[in-house]
Length: 534
Picture 1 (tube, rainbow, N blue to C red):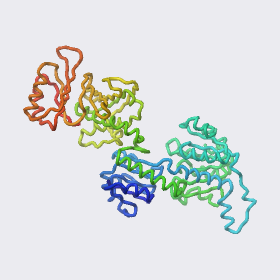
Picture 2 (picture 1 turned 180 degrees about the vertical axis):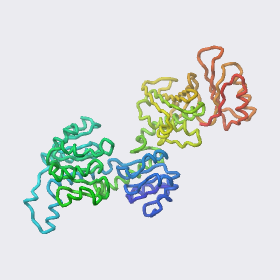
Picture 3 (picture 1 turned 180 degrees about the horizontal axis):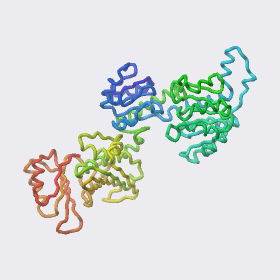
Picture 4 (picture 1 turned 120 degrees about the vertical axis):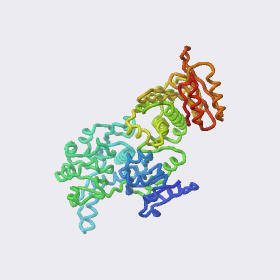
C-alpha cells in the first residue's frame, strides 16, 4: 500500500500508517512540488484544506481508492470526479467540534466586552474604560442555526453562561433539544428573539446566502452575529450595510466566501469601526483538534484499506465495523447474483430492481445495492464499477435502480432473501438468493423456477425442456471435452405439462471450451447454454 499525506498532519497519524508492514508512507516533506507523480500509484491520499483534489490531479491517480480529509469541509475535493473514479472520500466530522464551539463563545465574548478594541486602544496608550463598558452573556438569548455536533457543543457551553437557548434545525429531535434546555423554533422566530445568532449549518442551495438583506431585517435590532461555519452563508454586502446602519450591533466572522478575505470585500470598509471581528478560519485550529482529526482520518483510511469499512464518507454510505462485518456476506451475495444475472440476460440493460426480505430489509442497504450493480456492470470489460461509484454509473447510463423492502421473512426457508430483477430492451429476468451456513452465497431461484446452487467459480447455465435424457447427454458431452463436474443443480416448473421448462446450474472445475458449449447447444431439448464465471 502507498499512502500519500499531502499536507502537514499529526506525527501520531503518520506513525499509525507506518506501523503496517510493507506500507509506503509519503509525507508532505517528501512531496515538494511533485504531488501528481506521487499520486500516480497511491492507494490513499490524505489532505487538509490547501491541496486541491480536482479532476486534473485525479487524472494521474491510477490506483487511488480513498481520499481522507482531515477536517469537515470537502470544498477542495471534486466529489463528482472522485465518485466516478470509484474513490471513497472521507472527512472527520466532530473531530474539531469542541475547538470550533470554544472559538464561537470566544467571539461572542469579544463582541460583548469589546476585547479587540480594548486591546488596540490600550496598546496605543489610551485608557478608555467608559467607552468600553460591555454587556454580559448571562440572560441573553442565543439563536443557534443548526444543532449538529458543533451546534450542540455551543449550546452546552452557552448554557453554562446562563444564556437562553433557541435553535432551528428540522433534523433534530425534540427530546435532544429538551434535554439541553433548547427551544426549537422556525428561522423567523429565531431571528425575532435572538440577541446573538450563531450559524452552524453546511452549505446547500437552501443555506447559501441565508443571511441576506431580507433575513437581516427580521432580526432584532442590535443583534450580534457569529459565523464559524461557511462564508457562503452570508451576503457580505447586506451584512456590511446592516452593520453601518446599526441594525446589527456587531458581527464576528471566522469564515469567508473567498479566503483569504480580498481587499475589495465590503467588510474591509468596517475594519476601523469596531463593529466587526475577523479571524482567519482558525475555529478548528487547536493543537488538540488537529491531533484528533489527524488520528481520526488515519484510522478511517486504514480501516478502509485493510477491511473495506467505510466511515464518515461523503460520497458513499457509511457503516460501522460491526455493521460492515454483518453485511459482508450479503454484499458478496448481491455481487454474485448481479454477475449471474448479467451473464444470463440478453439485451441492453434498462432497469434494475432489488427486493429485500427478512431482517436485511431493515439495514442500510446502499452497499448491497451497489454490490449488485457492480456485479452486473463488471461483466463488461469497459466498466470499472465498485461499491463507491456503482449507483453513479447506473444514473450516468440512464439505468433506473429501485429498491423494495419487506421485513418479513420469505422464500426458500431462508430468513434473509435478496431478489434482483433486470429489465432489458429484449427481456426481463429475476434471480433470488440467500446466504446459507453463515457465509455461503447461494442461488435460490431463476425467474419462477426454484433451484439451489452455489454462486462461485465456473459454471454452465442451462435452460431446457423437461424431457428424459438431458442430464445424461450433458454429462457425456462434458466428459468428452475433459470438463469435470463439481456439482449439478436442477430445477423445474412445479406444474407438469408437455412443454414444462427446467433449469440446471452445472458447477465445473475450470473454463468451459467453446466446443463443449456448442455441443450442448446441439441437444434438441436445450434452449440455452451459457458459460459463467462468478
